[in-house]
Image 1 (cartoon, rainbow, N blue to C red):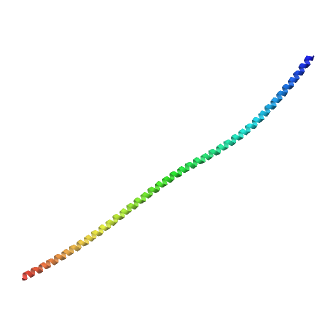
Image 2: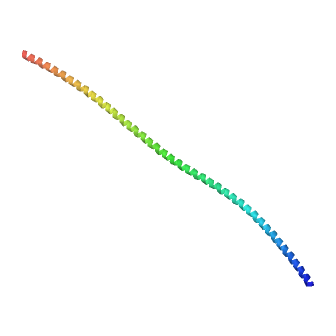
Image 3: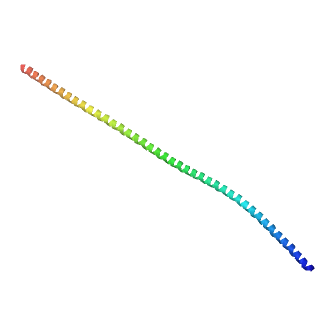
Length: 151
């Protein structure tokens, strides 16, 4: 009987040790599980923080890209405006030059007509004077003929 009691005692001790080991293992597994969940929550919070930071950077990048596109568009519009202004300036200068040439042409035309009128007046004066001289000459000729015939 001594062996049977020992064997039961050993078995009970062994069972107690086994139960104690299982309880300790479960307690340890529970602690590890708790720590892992705690670490998982921290990691999720950090991932959310990084995601929000990335979204913020992405939004800033989009704003910068939009601003860059707007600046390029503004530069393009300024260049087009400058070209249009230069073209308009060229057109105005061209029109002014054309008007100046037209005015010069009109002045020359006016001078031409004035000179033509003067020439006509002088021609008429010349004809009148020529006729007067002719008449005078003829009269002098007649007077001369009369004097010669009287002599």
